Image (cartoon, rainbow, N blue to C red; front, side):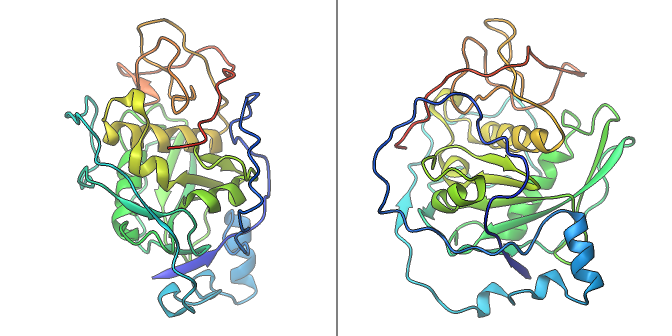
Length: 296
């Protein structure tokens, strides 16, 4: 299994650019996670290969790395009132159970090893890796990779209308972006915003999924964690494909996938997919001035 470390803030970011009324609570007790960028876009991977360096060997297998201090662990409550999702689920969905995760992981990422088939029949091909931060021990990286791939290959997803093709690759192949499941504190480092431990983001070629949201979802998805996870992946990958934020187009109708549904629905109903009723669905460009919760 390959592994990588990530650090710094590179490239353009879509880390919730709305005007936030966020808490200014003193967070000087937050220890910055030391991270070194060892994965990036296809160009970075190609450069590493030209230098004779295999990205999967940059820091060695994470299981062989030195053990750091045990992270504080937060337990997510089991979703209440869960019901069958109205949309397709991944082929091997993770059981809806309480998922424990660290507030701060190791900063080192295990990379899924499988290269999948190309999803989509036309458009530009984008290759992506999938990785899970060390310390998030209850999420198997290979299973997470399968779940990500199932969402991104869904016929209601970004590959449906011929604009894009998507393919999951392993740690040794060039990739256009990496889907990173990270702890809340590491999320702040990767997204360039230490005050936000709630949302996820896209920053450059990193699609950063906050494990707190992967584990807990949000209240207004009413316990439908499977649909929320699909929304979360489609929204952040949508940013990597050049999509901006959108507004609710009609009260009582579905929310566009590029609406910031993590923070609010504004009269729309939850929707996890770029395609609705067989067509690309969108709303007016823009974003709401929603506050970011400071507590889960």
